[in-house]
Length: 128
Image 1 (cartoon, rainbow, N blue to C red):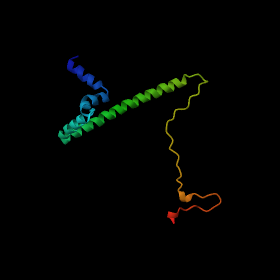
Image 2 (cartoon, helix red, strand yellow):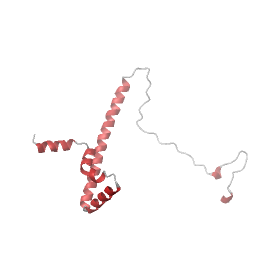
Image 3 (cartoon, rainbow, N blue to C red):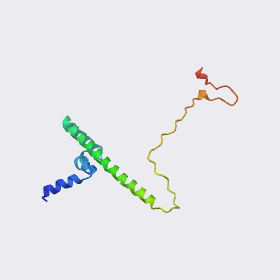
Image 4 (cartoon, one colour):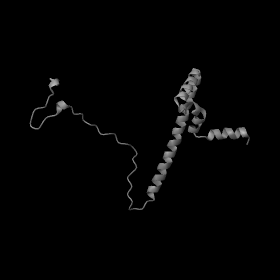
């Protein structure tokens, strides 16, 4: 395999986060205020087309990375489920939650609605 083909193959196998770091790390990975100002000035010098491409490329890499994370989480879930099946009978494991239930609906009680025991509702002086 030629060096050029090997380099291309390596770059295709890189994690999207590593690709983003390789292409944009110097510009976006700044640590000091002066570096940030420099990076912003360089960004402003780019044409609208160049800026649009860079943003689209970062979004694409982000979507790819999210897909990798999703696959890894699915693998972890599968391993956990397999491990749960192999546990002794006396070990109790809560069921995995497929969906998060919606939060309960809370009733808002205003001060005007508070009624003391055996009396009339209290109405603040400024509400009359």
